[in-house]
Picture (cartoon, rainbow, N blue to C red):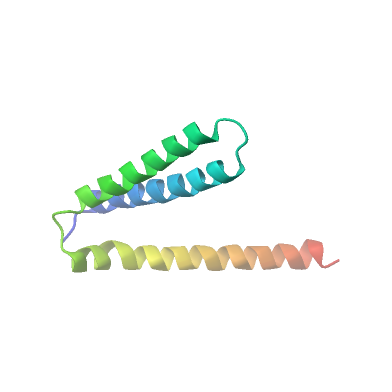
Length: 98
């Protein structure tokens, strides 16, 4: 069984890595000044975070990681996307449809 601290740290590193890589893509695509340095810094931070997550979870079995971390994250992300879609639908119905 994976400890709660390990799960929390690995989720934090995973989210920081993914957000950093997405921000690196956006900075490289749409930034006008200094996009190379910003993109490189964000990409380095993202990759370092993902490597850190792998290092934290290196002693655990794949089935434990899947059961303790990935399935709950998938459920939470699906619920968040459903809530955002519902909120956007309500805002559209109240504001934009008039």
